[in-house]
Amino acid sequence: MHKIRQLYDWILDWADSHYGTSALAALSFSESFFFPVPPDPLLMALSLSRPRRAFFFAAVCSAASVAGGVVGYYIGLALFETIGRPVLIFYGAMDKYDLVQIYFREWGFWFVGVAGFTPIPYKVFTISAGAFRISFLVFVLASVLSRSARFFLVAWLIRKFGGPIRGFIDRYFNILTIVFAVLLSGGFLVLRWVR
Image (cartoon, rainbow, N blue to C red; front, side):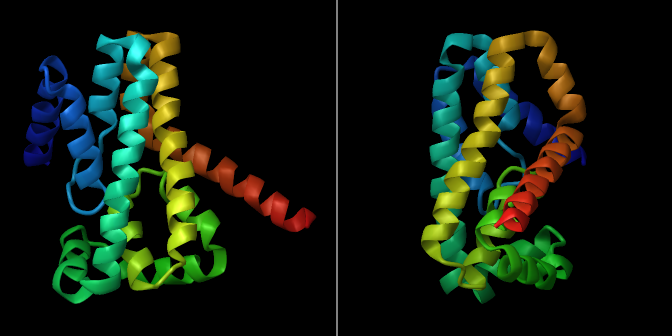
C-alpha cells in the first residue's frame, strides 16, 4: 500500500506541471490494461486548478481510457497467456475470471458498461473481454459510454462544487461508484423486464 500511495502522490505532482494533460492521457491509457492507479485523482487535481477546462480534461481522460481498453482487449484476445494472465494474477483477479465470463455471457453490453464505471480495476474487464471474445463493437461502445460517464461526472462535480467536493469524492469514491453501479444495473433490469 505504501508503494501505491507513493505512486498516487507522484501522479498528483503532474497536475502542477506543463505536462499535466499529457500525463493524464498516459495514465488513463495505461490504467486500462496494467497500471495500478486510476486517473481520477489527476483528473480532479487538473480540474480544480483549471475549472473551465474540466470537461476538456474529462474528454482526454475518456478517450485515452477507451484507447487503452482496446489494447487490453487485444491482450486478452491474442496475448492472454503471455501478458493477460500474468496481469490478472498480479491483481489477484484470476478467481474472478470465471465469474466475469458468466457475467459477460449473461449481460454483455450492460456488464461492460457497469464495469467501466466502477472502482473494480477496468483492466480486469478489458483483458477478459478480449479473452472471452466479446463483440469488439459492443465492448468499445459500452466502454465509451461508461468511461465518459465516470470521468465527466467527476469533472462536473469539481466544476460545480470546487475544492470541497474533492475531499468528499476521495473519501467516498468507492461507495459512490457502487451506488451508481447499483442504480445503473437496476435501471437496466427494469428496461429488460419492461421489454
